[in-house]
Length: 204
Picture (cartoon, rainbow, N blue to C red):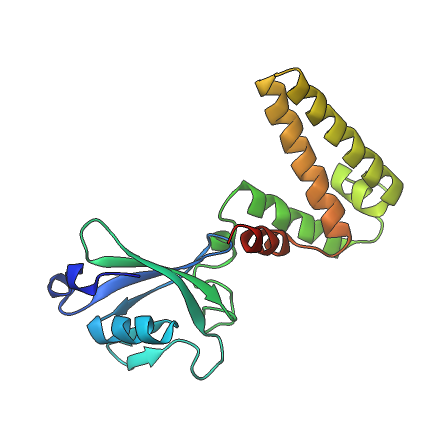
């Protein structure tokens, strides 16, 4: 998984920096430190262990249950930092947040930003104020027939663009189809994370 002998513990007075990243979403969850013993425990147990100057050796989630199952460990180019790709059982932060860096860290890419917006719109629900026009997304979420009609239209337009070998139009139509697909899934209560998990299971 990782060659501990290749790490430069001396540079950090016995410690290396560890960046914990959600292996499914790419979100940065937390930054901590580890010494050789902590990383040995991590490799041995398959769950993240860290070293704190105040807490000493600690097993993440041992008390709260919010363990971090190790997917992979990789050293950086200088050997003084480790990227830990993990599957978290719960929040990484002591505040109860999924990431110690707040909500911004969860928007790791454009799809995550889009999915978060859809979640907010779906949660808001209801009708807009009398003097306000509902957004396109709210209209789709509130109208099943419109939602399915647009999903079919966008799929057809992407197929036509691909048949025409029109790469630029295929990109635009592909983006439209992804958007309308996420809206349709969100209307069923399905999140991007669930879609990611299904895809991850298929590529193993």
